[in-house]
Length: 431
Image 1 (cartoon, rainbow, N blue to C red):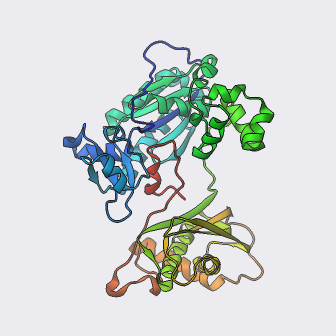
Image 2: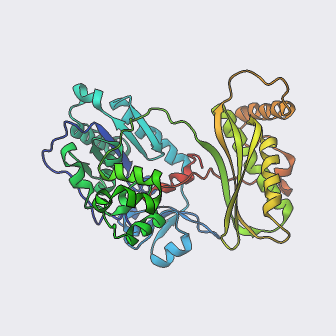
Image 3: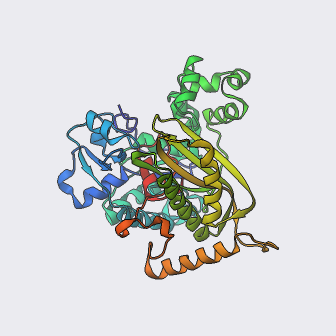
């Protein structure tokens, strides 16, 4: 059964002590599906999936009716339809999702300036300074839910707590269309009965390791001697899990998020074996990464290539540059060198990804000698043409297919395995 099918919903219905709970986590309910249902009300109450159906299409989002059949985001569509054969599949309208996301974030910003977007459909809010105008944290959460519903037709779930971690757990327990306040004094009592998978950083592998030690709940982890926990999962993760299991999370709400990496990846409908086709795809991905770097005013010091073979083996290779770059040609050259080490004759490639890491702002003193100067000037000229005439107006000749056909793909961010709406991935929030 899906982890977020609403079957374990827990909400606050009466008066509660929210005096020390200034952190809100707001999460839109089945966001992609909910936006689609605004124009397809006839599908309400039915199992609905958003995603691709051709070849290796995956589920981007699932309605709660579909989740009850065990369907989750990021699941292959073929498996989803085996589990829920009566599901209605919609391809998705990402421009519409972005439009609704922008309006929702504007509502948050009208309540408090301390908004930290996490993805297209969720954010943390610190409402410490909003109490005089808008009331207590619980009252503010109620106001946000009512405004989102009235102004967009969508629903959201909100967790209210003393820390970001507990607020996020609370919002997931309140789904769909609910609010859960965890009083600061009740934090440990709230957390300890939850399964270990509720701890940030506990994926399937770590969960299995903890279960082998007999640790099934958050409370079990909190009671575990630290040295024994350290031997099981390592010092860094043990320290973090120990803190979280006791509700300790000192992180503040940050209104800006520093990009840690920028990347694009693509899973192919059919495995690629043609070296020219593989390198053409590599160039396209490198170009898209460089464009995003320049738009963000960033340079990347490390280029990482990700490959998944036809047998699902996945490997990565990273190369550190002597000087950081935002030039597609440099990114492609480094990724291409790494590719030569990984792909032999006849090797079947299922997925290719390119990522720039160790980012820094592009401002600052210029290098005495810039080996990429000519390429950089050419690519910035292309940026200017694109801004004036639209995406695809100019691009490397290698990327133009016979007949003028052009390929496109979306950024592929990392997803949160505990979040069924993590397929906000497909909406372009980094890889």
